Length: 270
Length: 294
Ligand SMILES: Nc1ncnc2c1ncn2[C@@H]1O[C@H](COP(=O)(O)OP(=O)(O)O)[C@@H](O)[C@H]1O
Ligand SMILES: [Mg+2]
Image (cartoon, rainbow over all chains, first blue to last red; front, top):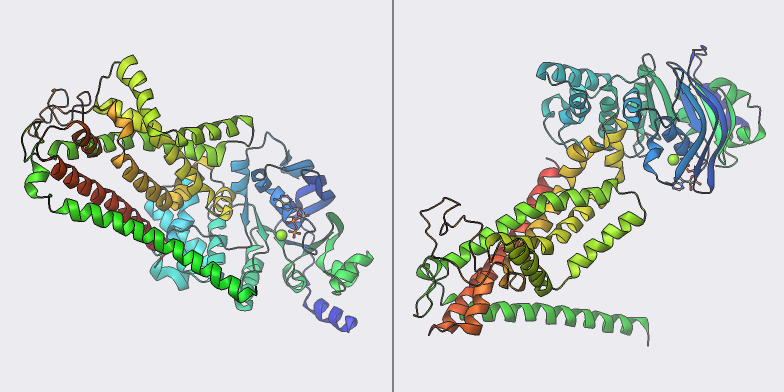
């Protein structure tokens, strides 16, 4: 039974195994909520223009970790972090970093699709207008381009001025990805982007991410191992706040070094 | 006693309370309206009140009530909403924040007659604004500001966190997120709260007795120069409002038709306050529908 399962997963594994340069390097990073040591001594690279998946049982610190990469955890008063996340030679965790600018380079998509209760086009144009782009034609062109990138253009081109909250869950999530692409970030972080969606919508998003990784660096949290196996180039396995194992997805799924990794992958806990 | 019986008793008690509440309201409204409506006429609404003779109206008082309300709102809405946004979005939990919040609560629970006496000391006497529209509006500001702060803060706190995260994750500043995403979303609940508070301000009398005064100069509704003493827009003239008028007529009136004027005025006041409430509901509902799409 276990062997069968293993075979099933490995048959999905993404076979491209190119070693891309490191864009972000996480060095001995610790994250606390008050006294709760939620992420412990994590060291890992994030490779440019590839998909890195973070897997692990729920509560192991995946969200905490990914939200630290673009400093979204600054919103939580009790959260505190130590260590270094190197990005183009600067430390993301440094208090001197301009977090607003950082987030235009490292965008984020959340588990629950969160379009703004405004029109579809306004959802995409809001960050553009904030960045000072007011030319109507540019705005329209970028909107079209972003919606095409996420495969939503054909579905919504006739109702761009209708409220985004009228879209289906899957469409809303793709709109949120399109919105994150508007300012052309380097990195897109996704925290369980498909866990609130049906299988068809999830498959569309996976396909989309495989397209996007040609131009963007993608980090995705998923509790779905098959999803990690299908789309990720690199996978990091977290357990109880520790990074147990990091490697190419192929290695991690076929020849895991640690016993707890293979136990998790084979569905023995989780 | 088995649970079915307990359930029955609890349910009957709840229904009883609801019935008492609704019938009290209905009786009160019915009484005021039945006694008052017969005294309301076009003449009553559009003529000046009279000091000695029967047949006076409430034109000036009605105007004063709305004018004082508008000035109060102009003073309270910008300050109150800013304060509410500060408390909900910027204030870090700590001593200063909880001190500000306690101040707001104390202010909100002050009896309005106390606010009126305070207004008389400060605005009427100390600043020398005399009995005037401005003194009245400032006293009502003390009384209304905490309500607006509260309504705004609650409106923002009720918003789901993921909207704010969505804005910040796109590289918007905190202020821009507030302005373009959070404020429009909180707007319906804030507006509903503001309209409800307007009803309270409109009906307030104790805070106005010694600030806006109990008399009105003969207003000339063709003279809109705010600087002239009998202009309806003059901020520094005394301004008896409708609810103060009801009180004044009842306690010290020497007109022969005291009952008729008091009843008619009460009915007008109640109708206005009811309209504020209905308007609040309608506006809230409309904006909600518009926001939820389609
Ligand atoms: N806002 C928060 N405040 C305090 N503790 C938190 C908060 N969010 C998460 N935690 C704690 O941090 C740990 C990791 O949680 P999380 O990162 O959400 O895990 P995952 O995303 O892997 O399910 C858990 O112990 C959780 O209780
Ligand atoms: Mg999570």
